[in-house]
Length: 460
Ligand code: 4AD
Ligand code: MG
Image (cartoon, rainbow, N blue to C red; front, side, top):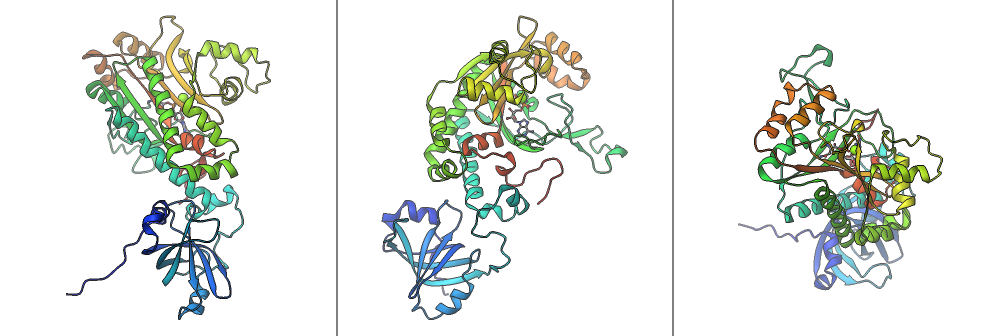
């Protein structure tokens, strides 16, 4: 029996992180060509495998037998397998490089037709080639930061003994009661085939299912896709986005705000510790001052104010807002951004909103006018987190359901939670793409999710 002798593929990131260990070793890497520089006796090929922002320089000696043939096909975008020795690099841009002993072409790439040219492309253009954009520096960096934030999310909750619950994507209830539902049907939606013997929708939030599990396992979180058919063509709205929703039993609004603050601080710190190279790219080319802002968010105390105080501050600001500020009206993005960006210059949580503008499940405060709601606002993004203490009193929640025009019968299971061992409980939802936007400084939410869905667009 012959054993296949093969040098194991190593990720470029690992070679660079453990340069000392790899010096003088033969390695194999596989990746895509970013640039080629041909000189008289040597060629320099920059290869990237996506494992980190910067690739690695491969040096190819023109003395290798098939040098001319290789040079024909080693073009930007081509995929290669490179075997060679890791050596210290005399160049100032990198510590190590690979001196190739063997290069194999895996896939050709016609340089004339390849849409990713060396120049900078606009994000609008890159959206039209969503199948190739992850190969660009910025979208690659977004993808790695997004991954780090998702991992940090699980670390944060798991370290605190929250259980991860998978809540359904198809639901029969409109959690937010805002009527922004996508219908789920096997046929033309007008025919009402009712596969599930009732109208069903894509979920807008996993909260109601999360409450069920919190009222059994104490602390849980969900992390899944949510869908909203709102016709908002803004840089902060998607029709399909991911939400992280913790839910805690035996917890009131201030426990909830504490958790949201600790969570944001934790994931921002995690990104600073694990994504420095990528964050530096954003700081230089996408959002100047980003690193400084993130360092501040990782360290400082955040603000907390009531909705009533927020309205007073906005009125006193003497700023010309597009939407008038008035007690009882919801805060608009421009108001939120004034508070967090201009007034406090740091994250701020606004609590106790008028009950008329918030969802039916939020706990009524003793003043009879407000509910125990919280919105966590951050510079540049505005509302990053929305949550509340839930109404745990049976009579009060029944009243709210009726007032919201919802069918009490349909929510029998939700009411049962209030009948059998009801407990104060609280939770919130973090818009994951808004978090990625916040940490990367990317302008448009459509560029922080691999395949964005928004009105008129569900391509790829
Ligand atoms: O404030 P929202 O609507 O709250 C809820 O859905 C609650 N049920 C959450 C809970 O208490 N468990 O949404 C939560 C967050 C917002 O703060 C925002 O960050 C994000 O989700 N979000 C969106 N992100 C992208 N596109 C949209 N269309 C979004 N709508 C909300
Ligand atoms: Mg909200």
